Image (cartoon, rainbow, N blue to C red; front, top):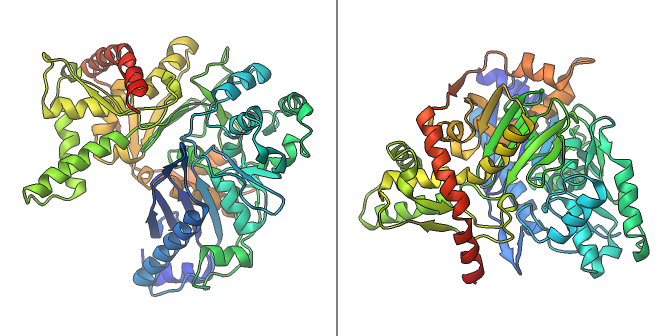
Length: 533
């Protein structure tokens, strides 16, 4: 882009900003009116395990956001010699689910529980029976009801409950709202009304009536908003929380805060019926927009929504690339030990491509990537594990192929239910996230796992930050009556380049052979969890 033109866009606020708080990175991207990225910024962070709880400290949220925004400001200054004083609209996205509860003074009552925590099984069993609806362990209402069952003191002090994106948006705008897609990971959403199921709210209140809490469930939940609705403006306090330099001005419109699943759908043009996407990074989830309701409730399949409120079958797995990344780091340490200089991108690319040389069934090797619990296979805790028999074909290629296969093992278990039991049809699966960064490899593995074509587009590499920036743009620049689906189809993705990998029959058969070992070997993982403490 012409630097002078870009500078004018920035000075006049003809831009949109998207910021997503992911599992390992907070990323911000600034787009122009042509949806091109003008500048970006980032901040690395990690969750921590404290007293058995996977969490982030809230002060880390704000230092991370400020560092990300400052990094973006530096990029703007370097590229265009301009100050980022105003923006057309801002969108915030973050990891879905979890438990963030606040008292009447807006103080956090208990440490933030992220999506990664799986200690709510008793609550989910009761709620699924009460609602006739799947309630995953990571959902906010599951954590709330588990706190009720455990008779925790803080429950009676709760005045507000939200997600990470909802919390950040609330602090920036003062508005207690949430995008319907993110809200659908807190409490079930009725696709007809685009809000919480009224009868389920009433059933919950009736179930806890004997506790005499000073709140009703609807009163402590954020208001769900659909894509395109106004969700408040950046306040003076919010501007300072985001930009510690004092340059950014207040009054900037903000779109509904979104969950990472919703922004993944947007970033891959997967919001219409019979489209799907797989996001594969620290965690992995698949989303398929449904033509009709499923015939029954599946504990392995969540029903959430698109940013417009349409029903989506979601298979969410807590574990994907964490163990794979740990092994790559071991290989990096090996290189460093012998003075071999290799950057991480080259190392990942080399090892991933080496995996394609391996046996289709991984030579009989087996691994589990369970850093944390995995509800799809019924584990409350996890232990990363690599196992082989003496007769297995143990090679680097098979070793890497095994860890790529197992990264998608749990997601395959869930999707097999959708395809085999419900006959769900999908025209295209779009892949995005770190697993697909090495060209062709992650696609080939996913195509084998799901036995369906997998496409990756150029913009998908930008992920959720780009996706929520597009949601901000849709709110700001949409035409009257223009749906999000039409906006994406006609204005965002028209002419966008993509690459499609078709499933290879031998790869599919090899993956199925690996999955036979995977399912049988879950007893080994169970023994590891019980023994390694």
